[in-house]
Amino acid sequence: MRTRIFCILLSPIASLTISITVHAQTCQLVVVPPPPDKGGHLICIAPNPTGTCFPLDEGTGTGKCTLARNGSCSCVGNDKPLSYAMSVDPISQCVYPSAPAVYAISFKPDAGYSGQIALGCGVGGRFMSCSVNPSTVSSSGAAVLTVNTNDGTNNALPGNYAITIDAVDQNGHGPTNSPSAELVIDPPAYTLNLSEFTPGTVSPGGSATSTIQLNPACGSVKSTCSFGGKFMSCSISPNPTSGNSTLTFNATDGTTKSRNGKYGITVKAIDQTGLAPTNGSQMATVVVSSGGGFFAVGAFAGLMGLWGLVVARRRTGGRSV
Image 1: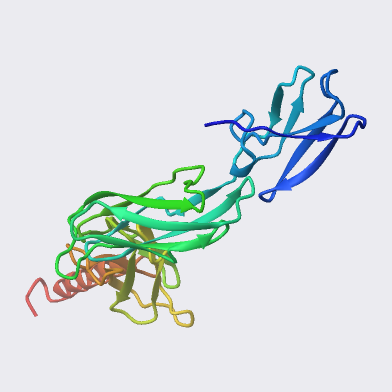
Image 2: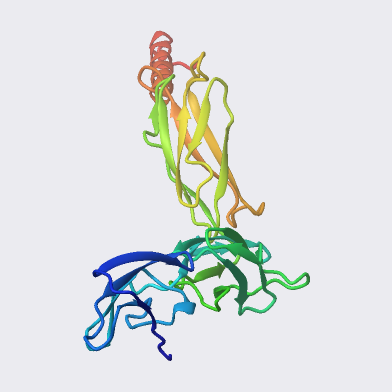
């Protein structure tokens, strides 16, 4: 790049430093005594965004330029040119085939740039397209990038895809950073697993928990629970989720306690596209028992019945009655 230095001859004055604004940037101008064979003072104007004396008409950072007695000009200070930074959120996301992916793009001025930025995008997969809205923003503006994974007839194939985001300012410059975005397309399939309740037996009014295990490739899954008895309740948290949830069974409806018995709690799930798990709904059982427990009470009743039969046979001399 060709360097141009702008110097202005002034009447003799003392050495001083002044500031001016060029392209919305503040530049320091150093007034120094000229070589002995020249009259007056010289002001050297040389913005330096690249670390060297820089043409005045190409923008500037905040720098200080000094004219030496031998006539040379040196520059020190901020070497940043007018620019801007770009950010993308999220950097990576996962969707099922045919589902759109949306990214938020935001901009921040860097070194004082305040002009417009033109935007564009690109994606390399078949049956895919992208768009940015709006297509032009300010240096502190924001836009939305949308990637479509269906061309109206065919769905994009599962895989990892890089999303290119183009940004060019009025000077033909890109952002100071180069953020990229990624899109993962996965087949819409997942499973639902349910652990046994802990504890397996509760008293009326008590509670037990089970772990719901979900493994969706993308997005989140919402679960529901149901039961076959009266005076009981169940809940799931967190819900929806893309990982594990806790299923809680309460042997009361908040007013009346559950009766003794063995109950099955069924869990169903559906993802954000309306798809159920490949292995369907799942069920776990829990026993509600008071005293010695539901089965203990039954065993006690059986023993009492057997004892009654023995007594009766003794009274009849062992004869059948």
